[in-house]
Image (cartoon, rainbow, N blue to C red; front, top):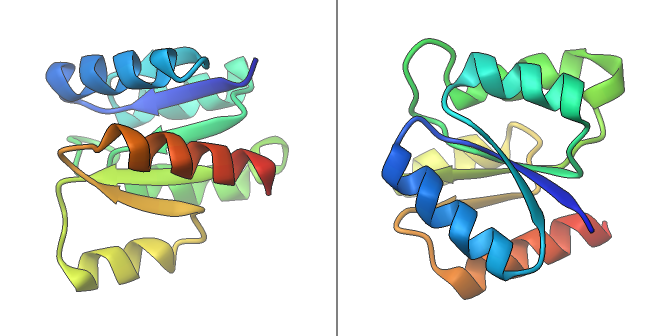
Length: 121
């Protein structure tokens, strides 16, 4: 069973995504901010990270860049999950080398499809 790390500072979004991902048959790890997310990514070895962008402290872009610099974590696929839904936001997010970009509120089918696709690649 694949381990999915969800990093989001909103307890409501974290709970909702956790429920959707668990219903999809995945093991779920959670982190409430970017720093905890980075620590969990390096210590818990997830197969995929669902990463919010807008967070206090270390935002999702910063977490993603730091992950890419750490050799052991370079190959963990990341999907941004964000309220930032403008075309320019999505284009900028995809330029960060992530496997996908999903806007909130999250659609269950879209989320599980993006996860399955990212894990196959």
